[in-house]
Image 1 (tube, one colour):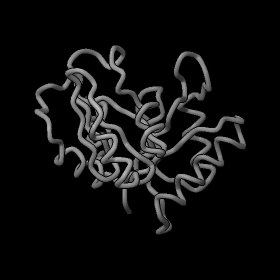
Image 2: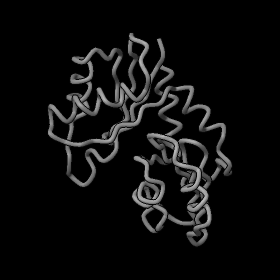
Image 3: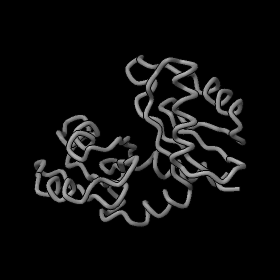
Length: 178
């Protein structure tokens, strides 16, 4: 059975859209997800699913379950463990810069014209690289000081996205292997 990782955007941030991870685990188990576990309070969920369905269908199932129970519109992005492992291997930046390195996950691959247009933008000393369904970002300083944000990526590339720091990304793969 494949191990999946659901990455939820915008829950438990700033006291808004609160969902206890124990409640989220129970909700997903009630919908047929198996071996459900979570990591930190920001919406990282690991699970198995016995039926062979596409990630988009799982994203919708999780989204709809949360919307029905909590009334929140929570964007959900699903990847397999192997997909995140490959994204880590594809990182174009030095991974020693772990405190300044981030990975943005896109729900779908942005249109090439939008990526080309975005690639012409500059953000001071912050660097980025967009590859298919991910954006790698190496910040010169802190994420909070940059204009290169998740919201900007979503707006310019017209895709749903959520960002994780490199430490969390590595932890997602580690925990998915358990």
